[in-house]
Length: 139
Image (tube, rainbow, N blue to C red; front, top):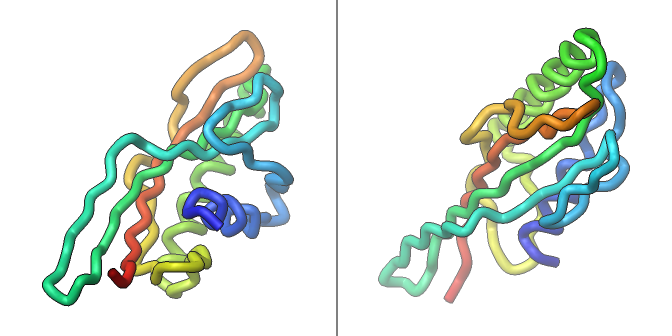
């Protein structure tokens, strides 16, 4: 399982009662349909090598949600969703409940860029937030 797949599986656990469930999160490509979600890896990876041969990687992923923006109530709900998701990620990090990587140990996962409107279309907005994951691999 790739890091991206592990994060997607982990994000799907987010499902507070007052918001909708993310049934499907695509990889890399944002669907043109309302209520669609995607996760794309950013083109930068920080690697910190150690004498022991271990390496600590920090990757950044952009989470996108295309949501209805027809009414002010829609936009308020969207911001509530984003704030709740940010809080959930931070709580999971503080509890040490991380995505399950098959060949690495996750050290941290957190939001580096909060949920914001990245792009607008006629009746939908594409909201974005950046998630950083730090993990350690043996040689």
